[in-house]
Length: 168
Image 1 (cartoon, rainbow, N blue to C red):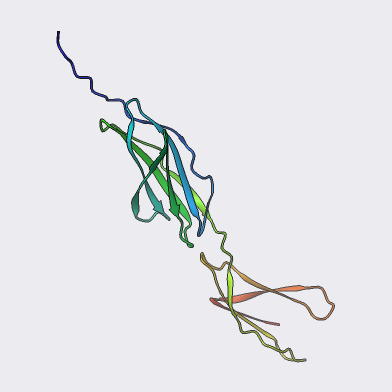
Image 2: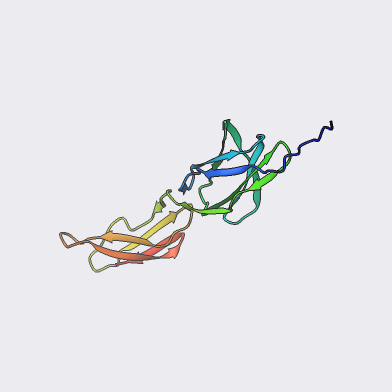
């Protein structure tokens, strides 16, 4: 008789991507993949990129038989997260998952750094609003709501960049 070695040429399979559906600025993003192989997965990882920037490798932790996980701390100014999962078995067969890009939802509100608006209003004189505003992603517009006495409220769009001005 003759002994014939049997080589594994079947790559692992990524059964399912269980990663979070939403990602949020300043929060952790949780990655979870179900991966199987006929002889056993030896290592799994993701290539990740924020805002189409440089790619980095992120090792996945095997925390249950076929489940691999990792956590990504998203910075306050992230706009998108792209990732692609990979898995290798004990024979060196590799599988790659789909490249997935998800938007990062901004949940950090703008902040008024300083309100330098006039302290008093005088009859017959202009009243100046002046506010310094910042935000982790950027300011789209600044509006002030004001009212005279019992009149209904009015809106005024302020102009500027970083420091916003308006007069009534």
